[in-house]
Image (cartoon, rainbow, N blue to C red; front, top):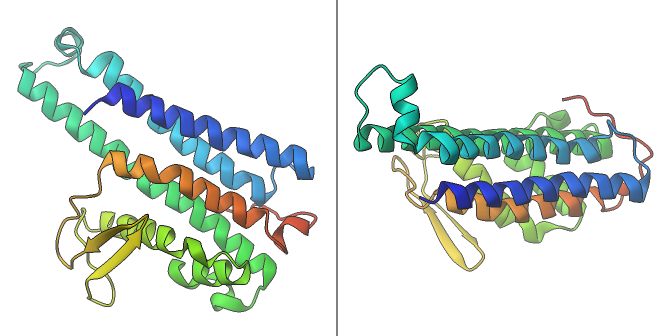
Length: 225
């Protein structure tokens, strides 16, 4: 695992999300705390924190001298490798959860803004929220991407095991690739590299949503999350 390369990729995505926020604010003159802008702040903040983790892995955690200085237990190549893998998994899971928390909370705001009564007043399950929103905005082509993110995130609630509420296996076809989620099994395809590769597409979906009618023409959408 090339933690330096991963960190640089995350940094690029962080800058992209931040710059997108700046661009949209300039284009539409939305207020700083408008929910159409804060969603990009949520994404960039998560990526910034993740990037810091990978910087620590690259700059310090791979060095035996650093471990000998701060670790009381015996330091070996195996112990260093194991610690880095656990640390990297911690950041990967945090990246998945926190990006999806940010996006989901913003999507719920958008749904309530467009129609306060639908999707159980914006409190329905996430799948219902984004399906309604994408249909309303004529962006249904993005359903597979969000289905993929949702299933990946939900599996994290069970330590990586897939246990959907309907108890059925699910297959998501995205980008010409079939991702098979099997009940009670780990999803070995969920790697850090996969997650990072999906971030630009997720950011683009968010951009398309906030720039679609009727959302883009609303004067102000308060950030309440």
